[in-house]
Amino acid sequence: MAAIQINDVKKRYGSLQALGGVSFAIEEGEFFGLLGPNGAGKTTLISILAGLNRADSGSVSVMGYDVVKDYRQARRHLGVVPQELVFDPFFTVRETLRMQSGYFGLKNNDAWIDEVMHNLDLTNKADANMRALSGGMKRRVLVAQALVHKPPVIVLDEPTAGVDVELRQTLWKFIARLNREGHTVVLTTHYLEEAQALCNRIAMLRGGKVVALDTTSALIRRISGSQLEIRLAQGQLPESLKPLLAHAPTNGNTYALRISEYADVEPILATLRQEGALIEEMQLHQADLEDVFIEIMDGNK
Ligand SMILES: Nc1ncnc2c1ncn2[C@@H]1O[C@H](COP(=O)(O)OP(=O)(O)OP(=O)(O)O)[C@@H](O)[C@H]1O
Image 1 (tube, rainbow, N blue to C red):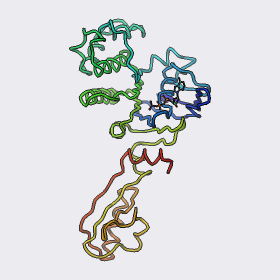
Image 2 (cartoon, rainbow, N blue to C red):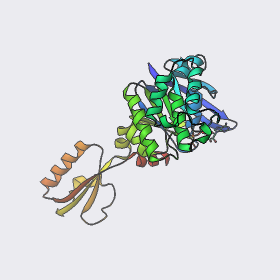
Image 3 (cartoon, rainbow, N blue to C red):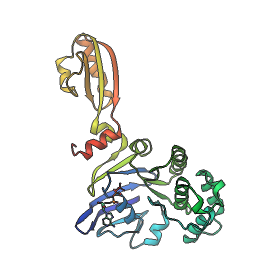
Image 4 (cartoon, helix red, strand yellow):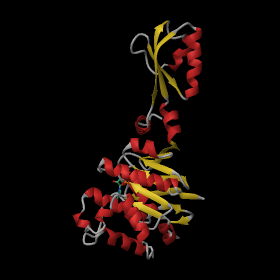
């Protein structure tokens, strides 16, 4: 069973088609990235998932529960960290988390609340009023709130926008641990380095449509490929290798050859050897997720 199943979801705001038929599944235990430029439809999709917004057509389920028909069950299996900070300013951190537990009918949840606060470095703010917290601290509470009912599926909508390095590290350490323990994690972020480091699979949305869906490594490999940069001390690039040139040689004897996997390197080296070319320097440039993202969003691939 998929942790999240999205079938042909459409959503319009007036004349704007925010989601134009989105379908994909996220398997249990995945660390999944949902990427796309501003306005691509990520938040709309997440709010439909969380039952805060209704799709015009199509269906979404969380751990097999339809987010409309089985709303309560779907909601119970999901923890969403929203983009916006909304709190009751008069409660303390602990009270806020106890109340959230209450929404899910959880009593005596203090041991887990303490553990979550500890892992998010919130323990010494437990009795502080929400209004007295800094923006970064409030964001930590937002994450804690989404986790009070130990949801098997955790969705984070740009959790690190404008937060400091320390919180990012604390947050990712904890979320990565929860993922190792079996929780499914879905992340939207504009920090592509973060997505590349954390997500095992990625969907890219543009204009309300899925324009790429693959494992992170396959996206990076297949779409932009890598380049083997070679500087020759002696000889020239053999004719048979010229079709691999990524661009015209920038500097006499330096060549950038396109490769799609590491195994492509060996025959290139063998050809050079056979043709009597001597390598002075060699480097492998791995394309990163940002290259891929730009290529896809520019509509090249
Ligand atoms: N309540 C609404 N009423 C009208 N239009 C809306 C509403 N919510 C979102 N939109 C529009 O729908 C489109 C998708 O917005 P959405 O917030 O889902 O994008 P996003 O991918 O989350 O963007 P961002 O990266 O900026 O958060 C945008 O063009 C947005 O202006």
